[in-house]
Picture 1 (cartoon, rainbow, N blue to C red):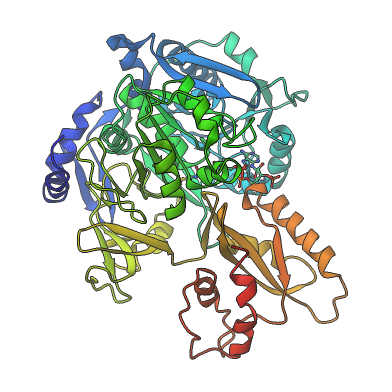
Picture 2: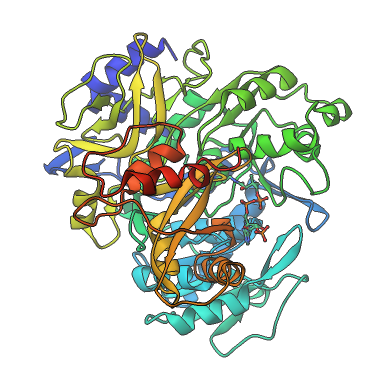
Length: 626
Ligand SMILES: CCC(=O)SCCNC(=O)CCNC(=O)[C@H](O)C(C)(C)COP(=O)(O)OP(=O)(O)OC[C@H]1O[C@@H](n2cnc3c(N)ncnc32)[C@H](O)[C@@H]1OP(=O)(O)O
């Protein structure tokens, strides 16, 4: 593929040529003649005159090209004790039939479908069936509580919800039907139908608006691919913002297909016929891009794993899956490796498995601490490649391009900007900072294909949240620096978003839950360091005068409230009752100062602080247990 530097330069100096060439990897029903449409800048569109179908590119064309008998998906599910495989032909058959089911329910191009499913092949079938019809899917992660699902239902206004009867966590079966009922009780918008994949582990009777997946599939007529404009939305994926209202990241069809089909060989060195395993969840962007779309777009085999790194049944689970399925590369979050290391510090389980096909470990989703990097490198004996990106971008911003030119790995850095991303580090005024100086990481507009085109139904919020702080640039919300050799170092968020076990969460929405408790006068939630999950949320609450509740009871109530309102994935377990929160003299809570203290970055006491002793008193709580 040539040298990285040369490719990076070309991507920025000749973007039209670069991306039109990349677009040749995709089948179009109308070939694009232009790459970028900047007529509505700062809102950009890619391949404005192109027309395609993403599902055709992920399935039909591979079957037509003779790849029909190759495994498209391997579902490895230690929580149910099953492993099944679907060839490209079988997956196409299921997708076409489920598209027929959706069409029969009135779902057409542009309609929204919410998918609320665990890690089962049916989740992929549902996503691709939407793509086949030109409908827009929005997958909601199973670890969210009913209220979060309700918020997404009201924002996306789906015609249909596709769900499973349950997800399976190692310690419990999570029944989805009551969660959906509760969510629809809270939501103003009501879908016409809820299609339910009834799993043997839990299946309640169906209600009047429910449809049984198996029954519907048994009589379905396969639906053909509907061509859509490259600029039409493929999906909406909600991500936490600084406020309680999640942001509906909109991904288009054309730019997405081109960027992902380009990224898998270039960054991950994965090609048609290779086995790729992304151990994440289809509810996250990593799952959308690298469990579902990218592997299928290039004709690879994707492993869909319904289990955990430890406890299903042991710390050798990842090595078993990699060895049994001949996995060439694994992509997961550092937390997964920290969990394995904690249970099996000497990686003794590795000796039981043949990992001769395994070439590379990719890690992203949260900061990769050097200890985990060294542990994984030493025990696996393969390159451990950190890379950095976001739900909004949909594919890596900074990486070590293993399929282009593997560069030396530097612990602490995800390496270099990926072609298409014009990355800069700027100060408060937007001035470019010299190497090694930390500032805000921004991306010059336009962003490359495959990145978000807007927020669902809210161009203004998109511009306000990402494009207005430094005009002409996309604000990543992360700070960092670039060293003399062009390696990027990402230091952490500059806002109230935290990252718990690779899950991006809003402290603002947790604060809203705490503030609603009748005993709480004011509160703050700050992410503190945690040796396993990277960060954990810690609540600090000040009680109303005259409140008599014990700290123990209050803590239990607040923990339960966050679990019920946001979900178990928030991992909210620690609350401290404090006398006061540090504030400026004008009454603003000093969250940024507390965040810096929690990160171990002592920025000094701001001159505007009302009472420095209050901040000092919180040092122990904010430094966490690790
Ligand atoms: C680059 C762009 C991006 O960043 S996209 C996001 C990438 N992030 C990821 O891929 C996430 C990586 N993390 C993980 O996969 C998991 O956290 C791993 C490492 C496997 C650990 O899982 P686990 O032991 O369950 O811990 P956890 O912190 O995830 O879970 C906390 C509580 O939530 C629950 N939970 C989790 N998933 C679900 C689910 N799908 N449905 C229902 N509940 C779920 C867990 O059971 C756990 O509950 P509890 O508090 O123990 O009762």
